Length: 101
Image 1 (cartoon, rainbow, N blue to C red):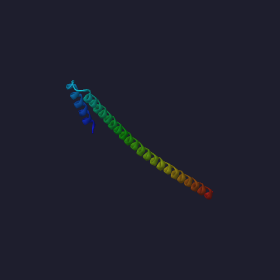
Image 2 (image 1 turned 135 degrees about the horizontal axis):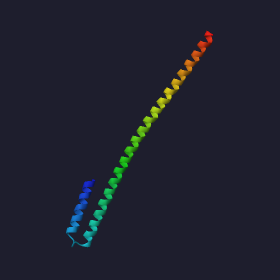
Image 3 (image 1 turned 60 degrees about the vertical axis):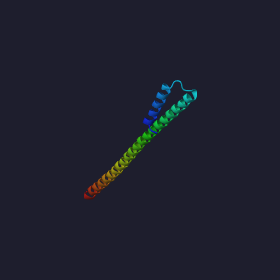
Image 4 (image 1 turned 30 degrees about the vertical axis):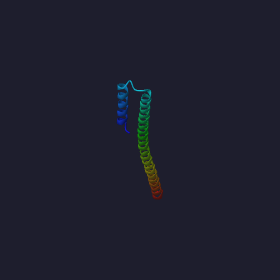
């Protein structure tokens, strides 16, 4: 049952109960039960939709965090490789200068 049909049931129940004010108490209590059931169904549907949306948002955040972690790891690798290249170049330059002198 979706929200629209739940609202339609509430409207139908409300209009039927207001039009037949001389109905017995048993039909009045059954309409109250129907209204309570409809309200509970609507609340459950809303809670399920909210949970699905929150889970979807958390999945997007988790994917974004994984992408950021991967980029950070790549940056760390590039920095380490650049540092190693700089150290090798400095050692080669020092060795060349020492050998020439």
